[in-house]
Length: 144
Image 1 (cartoon, rainbow, N blue to C red):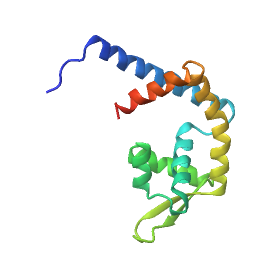
Image 2: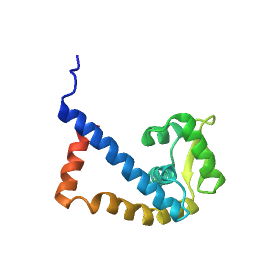
Image 3: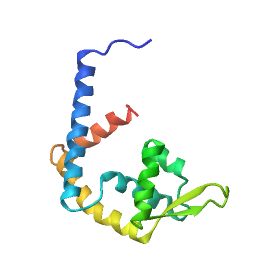
C-alpha cells in the first residue's frame, strides 16, 4: 500500500517537473533558432549511432527512447525522408526492419549536439556546481 506523499515529496515532484519543462523548452527553442530539427530527432539519431552497424529494430529504438509506437513510426518516417536513417530488412526476421543511421544522420547529430550541449550547459551547468550536478544525478537515478 502506498502512502500519501508528504509536503517535501510533493515539492520535489513539482520542482522536478518544472525544471524539466523549463530546460526542455529552452533546449527546443535553441534548436529552433538554429533551424535544427527537434530534440526527438537528436535522441533517435543518438540511439542509432550508439547501436553502430547493427542498427536497431523499431521496438528496440522505441524502448530506448520511451516513445509510444505511433510517435516512433512517424519520427522514423521523417528521419528516413530527410535521409538521416535507412530502413533495411532484418536478417534474422525477413518480416522485420532494422533502422540504421546514415552518414548524413551522423552529421546532423553532430550539428545538433553543438547547440544541444551549450543549452545543457546553460540549463544545468550555469546553475549547479560539478559537485551539485553529480549529487543531483545520483538522486535522480534513484527515481528510475
